Image (cartoon, rainbow, N blue to C red; front, side, top):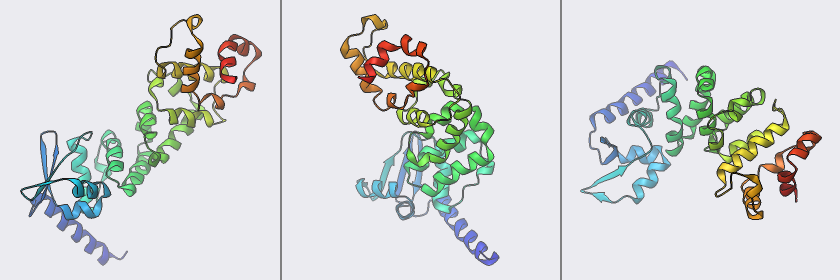
Length: 258
């Protein structure tokens, strides 16, 4: 891009930033908690398929379309709506926690190029923060398949340091697809018997009405747990477990391998 072309695009972006600030001829009101944003349907319609759907299904009141958004902070929306209007998002001036909080709503608003950019920026520039908030990042990254860059970042770390998740207080709350992705790796530096223990621990929490004492379990209890872990236990490498471990866990393992 030539310098002249860059200046033209800059002017174009600034003009739309001014339109956002002045609220001139707005015809959409978006409510987030107590905050109101006065916006323009033409811009929203063209820039986001999420808003395109909202605009087509929401009833007008006095020629104004009112949309209420939940599960997004006011600060995050201010950043995203400015991006929608101007195509600019200067992440260099934003805290890493706020950048990360932009990921899910960016995906919700159907802004795939921004979702990709946010992930790349965090991995390239804020890797230390991602490691500091690892459990949160790992769990969020598996909420949607569009977060594959972060998924890969996390699972690569876990291959060498699996206890970051397995020993986490939040382990039993991770998404099933996150656990499955982890189990599929053949380079986890942890004993297979320990993986089995953790998988069973996770499954027990996800399965309702399991007695605490294994001796009190009925065939239905075993079946319920087996169904819960139907996608996980086939990934356990039983042949890598010692004979002693197999004997110690034979009652459960036998139920799952029938």
